[in-house]
Image (cartoon, rainbow, N blue to C red; front, side, top):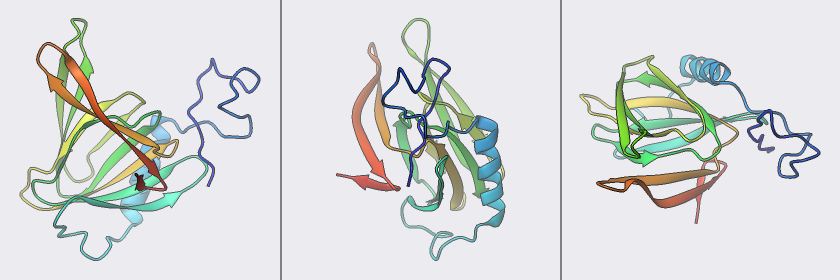
Length: 181
């Protein structure tokens, strides 16, 4: 698998040895959303995904430009505040409903939260540095498609601390959708 790094106008093959010229640029938010919507229409859930005991996932497609995951959420299932490293992403809810709370650092250095209700077919698109959590508040299990470009390599998790803003507490590393110890 080739992992396609995110490119900026400032990066070039001659000045950026970490981003070789033969790798393709990451997908735009619109493209990520299109891939996620198409997968949400075409994928059948795996056995047990409609009634998971805990939040679980599987990789459903990998290309040189993106990686797609299907996530199953039990009622009450959640993931704490995190980012997606250098990856941009799109999430589409395929069944049930989820709530996304995103955080950004305000001009005073404190976290500013905004919440989005994500019913079936609801979505969120984000770029690198986006910090959010997702929760299934019920009343039924939910499933969602997550598409990342480039492929997800890290997730840093954060605490909100009074007087300190967002504080990173750990970073997890992934390869092919698997947590690397």
